[in-house]
Amino acid sequence: MYTKRGIVWFRQDLRLHDNEALHDAISSLDEVIPVYVFDERTFLGKTDHFGFPKTGKYRARFIIESVADLRASLQAIGSNLIVRVGKPEEVLFEIAQKAKTNWVFCNRERTPDEVYVQDTLEQKLWTIGQEIRYSRGKMLYYTADLPFPITHTPDSFAQFRKEVERYVPVREPLPGPEEMAPIMVKMEEGEIPGLEDLGHTPFEPDNRANFVYKGGERAGLEHLHRYIWEEETVQQYTHRHCGVSSAGYSSHFSAWLSQGCLSPKMIYHHLKAYEQQRGASDSAQDLFHALLMRDFLRLMVKKHGCKVFDKGGLIANVDTRWRDDDRLLQRWVSGATGVPFIDANMNEIAATGYMSNRGRQNVASFLAKDLMVNWQMGAEYFESVLIDYDVTSNWMNWNYAAGISADPREDKHFNIISQAMKYDPKGEYVKTWLPQLAGVPSEMVHQPDLLSSDEQDRLHLHIGADYPEAVISTERWRVR
Image (cartoon, rainbow, N blue to C red; front, side, top):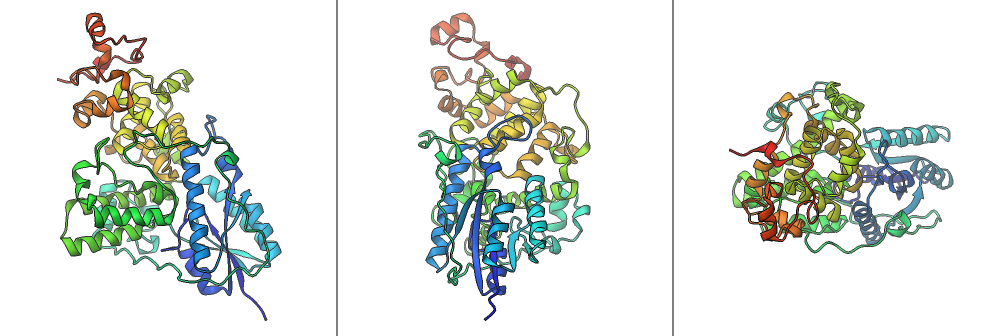
């Protein structure tokens, strides 16, 4: 009897719910072989130009947890997850040959590293009469539902939102399978690597973190239910999402979204259900706009292609003052610029892999607009260290920070001291991540470089010894 057999290649879609590739495979095949490959280039390699570890320890552990959770979920419904470490285009081709499959089902990716892998795999599969069947899985909207082709996507988010929000419905998320046929082909399931196998030392979460991520679909769905239905923290989103600390300053969906443990459509439909039961709210609407922004950034990369990674960005405009300054970059990375609001944020991301959106905007502006360091260095550092790294969101947001996006209204140069005083008026966030400044009065904690010698003596704080001298005097951002 002829058996239609195929592989589902899990990529950044580590979930069962609303997984179009998995749904299509189950509908089309007699036997489905789920596979995840830890790409050795992604987990053991370096960033393209400046040599940071391509996947830092925080994201590596989150992905390990997510893959383990996916395997457990598949086993619970009768299947399993085959796990390998290597190059996906080689590993999947080998499995396809041995298992005599018909197709590989997967979600299509759009950026260079991912495109290279999927194109190479596709070419290999053609040599044995097999092919890839692509699905979509990262976006809230289907591109086919948009009122314009990708090449005509507005370069302004405001215009994009205006053309899409009221007129394009968000499709219902696909249900996850309740059962699957077992894998009948004999093959080793493979061990899920540990942090040490990926070049990292095990670690404990920093006790200063406001939120601790746990990888996996089940943890993501539990957080979604808790955030919207149990604690109703969503109600605080509008008033607090621009902050840098305290409960409600972030939805914290980003890491689960970036690895596809949560579908954006699932979040959206929970928000709509919440509004139907509890009434419309600005907070639910603002969170929807954050999901919409993710789509917009992805469409910008689809439209403009590799320009997003170039030094001149989407508008091909290089500021000649940008330089590859390793010394200044290291001061920024290590939280030693002498500007507390910057240093506190950089200490947080180094200790947790996470930083608020407000913090990201400020540290990026500071690097590219004040230190005049090549913004690509900052983008690659974020690529390395962020637990919620998403290639399109990260690189597009750095384009905005550097003033080289296609929307001139997004060219912002932040006044760091004004931002610090607005979002950390008492210096509580700064003192959490810079404990050496704990004794500095709140009115001076953001500008310790302006303390006189006598004031430093009284505070038992000596600039240059206990805390670094400022690379730029905070008088630069004089607040009147």
